[in-house]
Amino acid sequence: MSDTLSLLENLIRRASVTPEDAGCQDLLAARLTKLDFRAEQLNFADTQNIWLRRGQQAPLFVFLGHTDVVPTGPVAAWQSPPFEPHIRDNRLYGRGAADMKGSIAAFVTAVERFLVRYPAHQGSIAVLLTSDEEGIATHGVVKVVEVLEQRQEKIDWCLVGEPSSTEKIGDVIRVGRRGSLCAKLTVQGIQGHVAYPELAENPIHRFAPALTELCQEVWDQGNAFFPASSLQVSNITAGTGAENIIPGQLEAQFNLRFSTELNEALIKSRTQAILDKYGFKYNLEWRLSGQPFLTAPGELTSAAHAAIQSVCGYETLDDTGGGTSDGRFIAPTGAQVIELGPLNASIHKVNEHIGLDELETLSRIYEQLLINLLVRA
Image (tube, rainbow, N blue to C red; front, top):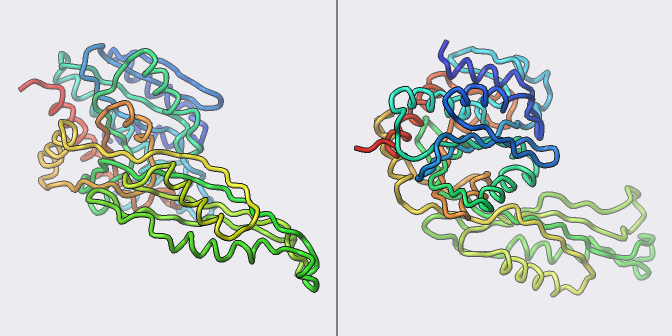
């Protein structure tokens, strides 16, 4: 059994459902501190974060990951227990195998092999791990970045181990992500009997035309790097459950995934202008989950392309699709950020898995990336 596979199995056995870490970070710190990494716990509220750094010189390369996983869903639907790693058909099954304990295991073994070969490399290496990525991400990387910025500890290059690959390992790297802006809308009406609509005000009827316009709004056309921005309604609730009562209130939740063609202020003003056209009373609460970011071609993207070509023998595609990641907290510091990890077909699903060959290839790609960035020609 390979070191990477063995480590991944040990991580999967720890049921670290967000925001729990379940001992994962201690396990990883125990391995890396033997290689002269300094471990620093930066915990906030119920979230565990660890900053492991080797060296003090620039440039600083960071592997960024999360030890928390999403809930399993119905355990009976799994072919094997989700927190008992199981190998079949050359795949390792277990919650977190692909998102993202597989990447974390590959980080560690790549670093271990790299340091055996190049103990006197230039620059510094760090590993940043949080247990609050799959949750609301309010006490994880965003808080650690505040600490690092306060003490002027600057990250030059950051690789996030999110599962970016689609058909084969390394065929896609994320060089940016769309922004995410969440909204909670409350429409006020007047409750009453359905037989006397003149004495009531139905918030569903009042909101319906505005909802249509919001959904049909063309927010932008996207650009060369990002698809067009999109508004999606996630929840609408109203009514008492009785068939003869006009509800007095409606609540709706929606989200905009937006490109660099938009910004938070513009989205808010355009949304409110649409709502105001229809004359109903409402309250609108916003939560910015993350700004869009884009890493321009540079040392990190070049090193990643070269590493994938060297290990896999094919070119990779730069892309900005998918949801958000903790990279959104690193990019504003001026760091170059990419995401490179396993295939994403099984993430968050029942019977999540990673291919054994895929896992080993990923570790070799990470090792070659370190060589490309931190070893002088």
